[in-house]
Image (cartoon, rainbow over all chains, first blue to last red; front, top):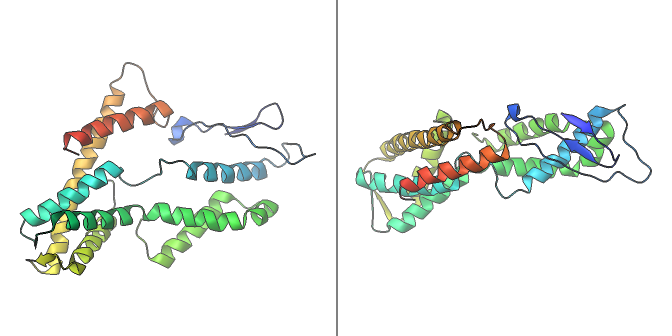
Length: 155
Length: 91
C-alpha cells in the first residue's frame, strides 16, 4: 500500500499486517523542482521499495532461519550428543563445539549473505533501474536465483 | 521442522566435513554413519525448536486482546517468550 501524504516531500508506506510485515514510515527528499504525481505510481513505488530494502537491511536484527541463541544451543547439544552416542571422540570438546557452531551458523546465514550480495549488485544498477522503471523486487528475485545457482546453495 | 529436508542434509554434511578436518576428533563410526547420525540429531533438535516457536505463539494468542502477527508488539512479545523458552534449555 503506497500513499502520498502532504507535504509533498513526505512519502508514507504502509505495509499491511496481513502480509506479516510491520508498518513503517519512510521519508525521502525529492530532487529540487521535482514533485510527486500519480501518473507513474509504479516507478515511485519501485524506487521506494528499493530504499526500504536498504533501510531494512541496515537493521541489526537480521533475518535468520533460527535465532542466534538457538544456534548456540544447537552447536553445543549436537556435539554433546555425537559424543554421547559414541559417534565421535574428542578431548577438546570446547574447540569442537565452536567449530560445529561455526559450521551451522555459516550455513544458516547463507541466505542473508546472498541477499546482501544481491543488494550490492542492484545498488550498482540503481540509476539504470530507476531510469528504465525496472521492478526492484523482480530484479531482486532474478539476481538472487542466479547467485543461488552460482553458489549451488540450498536455502 | 521449519528447515527443508535438503537444508538439514546440507547442515549435517557441513558439520561432518568440519569434524573430518579436525585432528582433535576421532571418528568411531564411518563418516556416512556420522553424517546420518548428525542429521537425526539435528532433526530432533529442530523439532524441539518448532515446539518453542509454537509455545511462544500460543502465549501471544492467549493474551486478552488480539495482537496482530507482524506488528512491532507481536515481534517484541515473540522474541521475549521465545527466549524464555530457550533459556529453559539452559542456554
